[in-house]
Length: 132
Image (cartoon, rainbow, N blue to C red; front, side):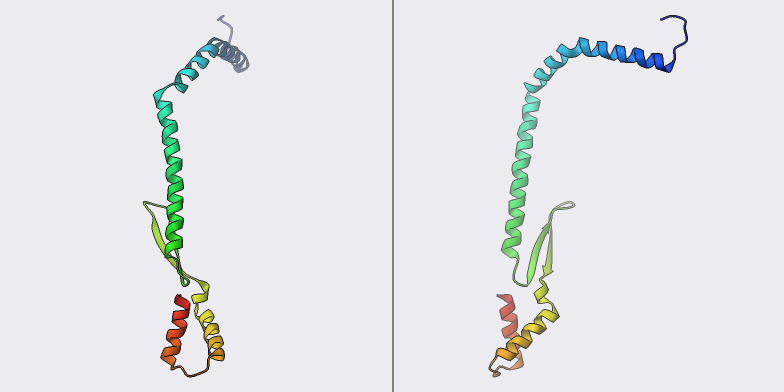
């Protein structure tokens, strides 16, 4: 280079030309390197690991769903949370297990019943009906 002062505009133009020259020189090297990586054992192992991860994710989802369906009842929902260190179990009551909902059921059952049950029998009858 000459003794002339370099400006940012000139430096950018030269940098673009240098970059173009580098790309032209390395075009064949990039293709060869890509083929080498594609043929490597490490990439094959990575693809296999990714495949196994997908299989395990599917298995995890299936197990979570099966647990929730198996252990949920008419009164309670079982939910498995997958956040944090490991799975956490949460139990949540259904809305129909609320006092208001049970009160409505008691009123309907009392209206429809023949009236020969004791209060304890009636409570057990309603609880049994909700538990089944």
